[in-house]
Length: 160
Image (cartoon, rainbow, N blue to C red; front, top):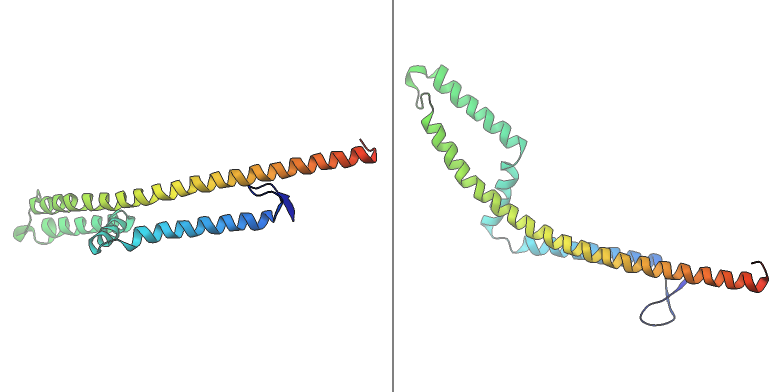
């Protein structure tokens, strides 16, 4: 145990336990932030998060590319004279425009919620950093006090 200067004089504090407590506080607070932003989501907001997760993935891009390839091959080669969407693929362009006009705002809604959550987490991280600085400052004060005590002991013993 090390004597630690706090607001109350002469309180014994185990530095390791103090740091562990701070870590547990921050972890608990981060869990609360995540829970807060997850619990109030409506069904459509959860759906927009899922759409954003899928729509912003390589799996979606690959699948969509394959869909486009199948569409073009089907209309140009297989159904050549009976194509339901002949070149220049006006129906495909319409579907792609509708998909983009719906998908973009849904992804933006999801990103806005994620940005608000991330901002809250950043503020908590800043608070944790400030607490860490206070712990570091207290540790340095303890080390300086120990250094002064060691010098005083050396002086009394005639070693310095």
